[in-house]
Image (cartoon, rainbow, N blue to C red; front, side, top):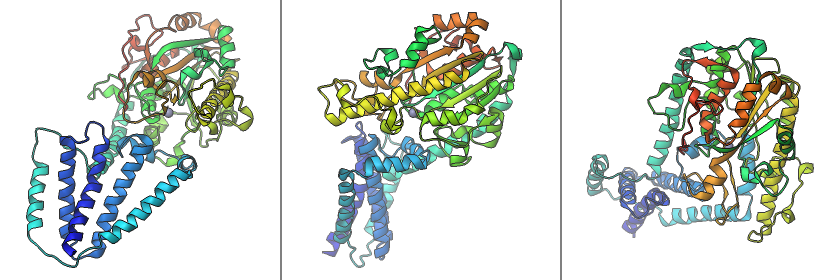
Length: 529
Ligand SMILES: [Zn+2]
């Protein structure tokens, strides 16, 4: 009986550690899964021997294995991914508001509460079932453990799958490495050499608006049936707005997108290429542009200088001081209130760059617009293949898209009377039950099927020019209009900004500016990092 409970303890702990390796589609029932099993068995046998006289030790080891298993299972169910570096970064970058929204959306549903209750009950049952035997001191487990230890460290001709312990260690290591990038970015700032910049009166006001989770197929600018972008449609009809039709993003994560937009990292950049650490705002500042940064998702103060929020690399003091003249310290629940709040700080004199990062249509879309901005309801969504509640979710997304149009209108109005050019693009899209697959949200396991590419990686982008800008920069305006159909990768946005700003420097590549006559289009390589 005692031996039997020992055997059961080893078996259950081993399975808890290695089963999540099977969640990865390519790993299941393959050599990788066998590798994860061997490693797990090794860890458990060592732990079993070390804790042979300690009930407390046995309980602790079992509890850790159980917790790791539940966490991996939970992230797999909700994010279609194991607890990998992406998920860890996501958690570390999550603000208090997002956590409470996450709890309200996921945890306070009856299904999840039932799941959590089952987790607790199963834990109690297993704990009772696996209660340790008294003392059995044998030599053989030590020998077996030592043998397994050698096996796990031998160079094998095939990769070994990650059990939950390796997975956690790998994630922590990854986040540490990310931090090393900061050092390289500091060096890159010192290496910038500006060759040319315009006289103050000749330089425009440039505004870069980074949207969030904008599926362009839900915008009437791109042919959607409901009127979700009425203000932008009017700007287009009056000749101020140019809508780009073939723009793609290399990533579906906000933090990774920010890295592509703020630095010279391209989707095909070689790992050894140091220009990937050059920060676009630092170049603009050295070219005597005033630079202001307004972010409604994260502020420098929200996570401190070491946080891993989507703009974490912009937070350390040296980088912050060399990139920005102004940065907001507070965020607002709705983008409209945010713009209202910070537009007094917008830089509207010649030779300025304003960067604005919105909440946009980020999940949960119903929370992105005030109640009185809800124009559409389930009855407006003509989709007989969807349930009532799914059609309601589509309507909420469309309302958020329309509210985003209103917010863009506010931004435009702030610059209407100045010599300004505004570039809007989304970090990535989102799936809103669009196709036959009826996918919703974003997965984190790198799917590249046709529906995902169309709704997540093919993004909206537009350039608005004020009447003053069109009058003073007729040639640029012509070039913008002539480029609307070009295939463009959002990672090359910095080069478009340098072109519009009239800035040249030591890492510039004219052929990457979508409006340049030398522009060379390239395929967007989806990297998801
Ligand atoms: Zn995003």
